[in-house]
Amino acid sequence: MERLIQKIKDTILIGIGIVAIGLFILIILPTVPFFLIYGHFSDKKFQENYKLFLERMNGARFFCYNSRKSSVEFAREVIVPELDPSVRVVFVDGKKVDFGADSQYVSKMLYSVKERKGFPYLLKIEDAQVIDTSVNNQFYSIMIGQKPTAPLLDRINAFFSSTPTVSPN
Image (cartoon, rainbow, N blue to C red):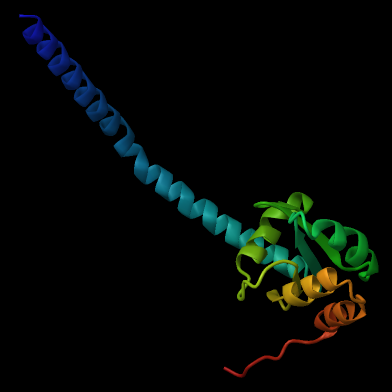
Protein backbone atom coordinates (compact mmCIF):
# COMPACT_ATOMS: atom_id res chain seq x y z
CA MET A 1 0.00 0.00 0.00
CA GLU A 2 2.86 2.40 0.84
CA ARG A 3 4.40 1.74 -2.56
CA LEU A 4 1.13 2.60 -4.25
CA ILE A 5 0.83 5.85 -2.30
CA GLN A 6 4.47 6.73 -3.11
CA LYS A 7 3.87 5.92 -6.78
CA ILE A 8 0.79 8.20 -6.82
CA LYS A 9 2.80 11.00 -5.16
CA ASP A 10 5.61 10.60 -7.71
CA THR A 11 3.11 10.64 -10.58
CA ILE A 12 1.44 13.78 -9.22
CA LEU A 13 4.86 15.51 -8.82
CA ILE A 14 5.82 14.57 -12.37
CA GLY A 15 2.45 15.85 -13.62
CA ILE A 16 2.88 19.13 -11.75
CA GLY A 17 6.43 19.45 -13.15
CA ILE A 18 5.21 18.87 -16.71
CA VAL A 19 2.39 21.40 -16.29
CA ALA A 20 4.84 23.96 -14.80
CA ILE A 21 7.28 23.49 -17.67
CA GLY A 22 4.43 23.74 -20.18
CA LEU A 23 3.17 26.98 -18.62
CA PHE A 24 6.69 28.37 -18.57
CA ILE A 25 7.10 27.61 -22.27
CA LEU A 26 3.69 29.12 -23.08
CA ILE A 27 4.60 32.30 -21.22
CA ILE A 28 8.14 32.61 -22.63
CA LEU A 29 7.47 31.53 -26.22
CA PRO A 30 5.54 34.68 -27.24
CA THR A 31 8.40 36.89 -26.00
CA VAL A 32 11.07 35.19 -28.15
CA PRO A 33 10.29 37.22 -31.31
CA PHE A 34 10.59 40.45 -29.31
CA PHE A 35 14.02 39.41 -28.02
CA LEU A 36 15.11 38.51 -31.56
CA ILE A 37 13.89 41.84 -32.93
CA TYR A 38 15.58 43.73 -30.09
CA GLY A 39 18.82 41.81 -30.70
CA HIS A 40 18.70 42.61 -34.41
CA PHE A 41 18.18 46.33 -33.92
CA SER A 42 20.71 46.65 -31.09
CA ASP A 43 23.32 44.88 -33.27
CA LYS A 44 22.47 47.19 -36.15
CA LYS A 45 22.86 50.22 -33.86
CA PHE A 46 26.21 48.87 -32.60
CA GLN A 47 27.46 48.43 -36.18
CA GLU A 48 26.47 52.03 -37.00
CA ASN A 49 28.23 53.32 -33.89
CA TYR A 50 31.28 51.16 -34.69
CA LYS A 51 31.46 52.69 -38.15
CA LEU A 52 31.26 56.19 -36.63
CA PHE A 53 34.01 55.19 -34.17
CA LEU A 54 36.26 54.09 -37.04
CA GLU A 55 35.63 57.35 -38.87
CA ARG A 56 36.24 59.42 -35.72
CA MET A 57 39.43 57.51 -34.89
CA ASN A 58 40.83 57.59 -38.43
CA GLY A 59 44.64 57.58 -38.20
CA ALA A 60 44.66 56.17 -34.65
CA ARG A 61 47.28 53.58 -33.76
CA PHE A 62 46.98 50.99 -31.00
CA PHE A 63 49.42 48.76 -29.15
CA CYS A 64 47.39 45.98 -27.52
CA TYR A 65 48.90 43.66 -24.95
CA ASN A 66 47.32 41.21 -22.55
CA SER A 67 47.58 40.13 -18.94
CA ARG A 68 49.78 37.09 -19.56
CA LYS A 69 51.87 36.92 -16.40
CA SER A 70 55.13 36.18 -18.18
CA SER A 71 54.98 39.27 -20.39
CA VAL A 72 52.78 41.96 -18.87
CA GLU A 73 55.65 43.54 -16.93
CA PHE A 74 57.97 43.52 -19.98
CA ALA A 75 55.29 45.12 -22.17
CA ARG A 76 54.28 47.70 -19.55
CA GLU A 77 57.75 48.69 -18.34
CA VAL A 78 60.01 48.19 -21.36
CA ILE A 79 57.99 48.49 -24.58
CA VAL A 80 55.17 50.93 -23.76
CA PRO A 81 57.46 53.74 -22.54
CA GLU A 82 59.38 53.55 -25.83
CA LEU A 83 56.28 53.93 -28.01
CA ASP A 84 55.41 57.19 -29.70
CA PRO A 85 53.10 59.20 -27.40
CA SER A 86 50.38 59.17 -30.08
CA VAL A 87 50.10 55.37 -29.89
CA ARG A 88 47.14 54.37 -27.76
CA VAL A 89 47.98 51.57 -25.36
CA VAL A 90 45.26 48.98 -24.78
CA PHE A 91 45.45 46.49 -21.94
CA VAL A 92 43.38 43.31 -22.30
CA ASP A 93 42.68 41.48 -19.06
CA GLY A 94 41.13 38.16 -20.03
CA LYS A 95 38.17 39.18 -22.17
CA LYS A 96 37.95 42.67 -20.67
CA VAL A 97 39.40 45.45 -22.82
CA ASP A 98 40.50 48.52 -20.88
CA PHE A 99 39.93 51.52 -23.16
CA GLY A 100 37.32 53.62 -21.41
CA ALA A 101 34.03 54.43 -23.15
CA ASP A 102 35.23 52.96 -26.45
CA SER A 103 36.24 49.57 -25.00
CA GLN A 104 33.49 47.75 -26.87
CA TYR A 105 34.75 49.07 -30.22
CA VAL A 106 38.38 48.22 -29.51
CA SER A 107 37.18 44.79 -28.39
CA LYS A 108 35.42 44.38 -31.76
CA MET A 109 38.63 45.38 -33.55
CA LEU A 110 40.59 42.77 -31.60
CA TYR A 111 37.91 40.14 -32.14
CA SER A 112 38.15 40.82 -35.88
CA VAL A 113 41.94 40.34 -36.11
CA LYS A 114 42.55 38.36 -39.28
CA GLU A 115 45.61 36.34 -38.30
CA ARG A 116 45.44 35.29 -34.67
CA LYS A 117 49.09 34.78 -33.83
CA GLY A 118 48.88 36.15 -30.29
CA PHE A 119 49.41 39.31 -28.31
CA PRO A 120 50.76 41.92 -28.61
CA TYR A 121 48.76 43.19 -31.57
CA LEU A 122 49.30 46.39 -33.48
CA LEU A 123 46.20 48.01 -34.92
CA LYS A 124 45.72 51.13 -36.96
CA ILE A 125 42.66 52.71 -38.50
CA GLU A 126 42.95 54.09 -42.01
CA ASP A 127 40.02 55.11 -44.17
CA ALA A 128 37.63 53.62 -41.59
CA GLN A 129 39.34 50.23 -41.98
CA VAL A 130 41.29 48.38 -39.31
CA ILE A 131 44.72 47.09 -40.26
CA ASP A 132 46.30 44.65 -37.84
CA THR A 133 49.38 42.58 -37.23
CA SER A 134 50.87 40.54 -34.42
CA VAL A 135 54.37 41.05 -33.07
CA ASN A 136 54.07 38.01 -30.80
CA ASN A 137 57.07 36.02 -32.08
CA GLN A 138 59.53 38.89 -32.07
CA PHE A 139 58.19 40.23 -28.75
CA TYR A 140 58.71 36.93 -26.92
CA SER A 141 62.01 36.21 -28.66
CA ILE A 142 63.39 39.52 -27.41
CA MET A 143 61.86 39.17 -23.95
CA ILE A 144 63.03 35.59 -23.34
CA GLY A 145 66.42 36.03 -24.97
CA GLN A 146 66.98 39.38 -23.23
CA LYS A 147 67.92 40.88 -26.58
CA PRO A 148 67.87 44.58 -27.52
CA THR A 149 64.39 45.98 -28.08
CA ALA A 150 65.39 48.18 -31.02
CA PRO A 151 64.39 45.68 -33.77
CA LEU A 152 60.94 45.23 -32.21
CA LEU A 153 60.45 48.98 -31.82
CA ASP A 154 61.59 49.48 -35.42
CA ARG A 155 59.03 46.93 -36.60
CA ILE A 156 56.29 48.60 -34.55
CA ASN A 157 57.16 52.04 -35.91
CA ALA A 158 57.41 50.70 -39.47
CA PHE A 159 53.93 49.18 -39.19
CA PHE A 160 52.44 52.39 -37.85
CA SER A 161 54.10 54.58 -40.47
CA SER A 162 53.41 52.35 -43.48
CA THR A 163 50.51 53.02 -45.80
CA PRO A 164 48.25 50.15 -46.73
CA THR A 165 48.32 48.70 -50.19
CA VAL A 166 44.92 48.81 -51.79
CA SER A 167 44.08 46.14 -54.31
CA PRO A 168 42.09 47.32 -57.32
CA ASN A 169 38.54 45.96 -57.43
